[in-house]
Image 1 (cartoon, helix red, strand yellow):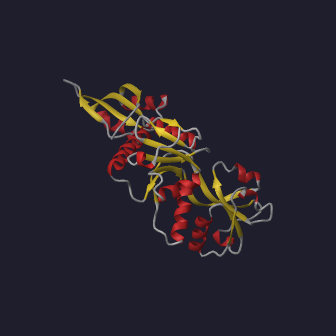
Image 2: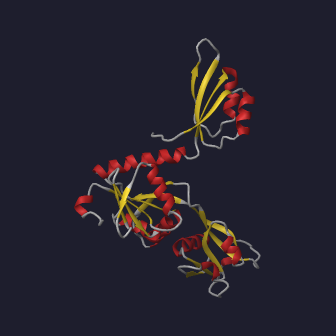
Image 3: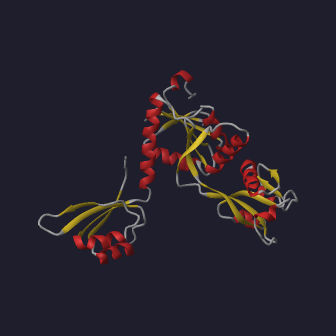
Length: 304
């Protein structure tokens, strides 16, 4: 199946996601949980939306901000590091904002760190003065160095950044770190974090109008509802009115509860959405505080 002609997709929303890599499958799973499904093209680069007029473009992570800037797609799921790097480049070149982060998606967490050889004694950022720093994120690194007043050489590499000091290409590195195992394997350790990153939903600088705009608003509501319910449970219980404040102190991660007085009693029936893990010990603590008839129920969908 080939992508529809441009005239046929004018009112269809287009979302770009990573074709392969660690963000690809979680992105599809998130969108599927919003009620979307697709027919995939033969080249596996385009997915035609069937349940809603929402199509997927399967591309390289680094291409997504540019596609948003050019109007090729309306939304993209991308690492904050990629979005921030291209935003830093546009800022340095005096170009206007082309893509913006709408909200975080709670997967793909990592950090953009500066790492130094284990043999170094770290004394602070000034120690990088005059050093060579290898990175795949030159614009973010240059901006940080400029703000720190540090004159260092930025060595731009597209891959294998961690091995650069061992090969004599650099003195330190600035790279993405998740577990830190790759740094440790190359006798490096992180000392500074330039950016906390994770997957984010990005949109064009200006939201689409008309049918596409309304469809985008609908999809954003669904996505926020799915994210809001992640690891959430509906807690239902009863408590004497005088004991309710003590019980609620044990639920700092819960929404304000719905309360109803039982007929002819000084007892309230309560229900609330909790986002923390509801362990057996936590339920026992709630019972000791005055809750009874405790029930924990899964929540499938929510729409604000």
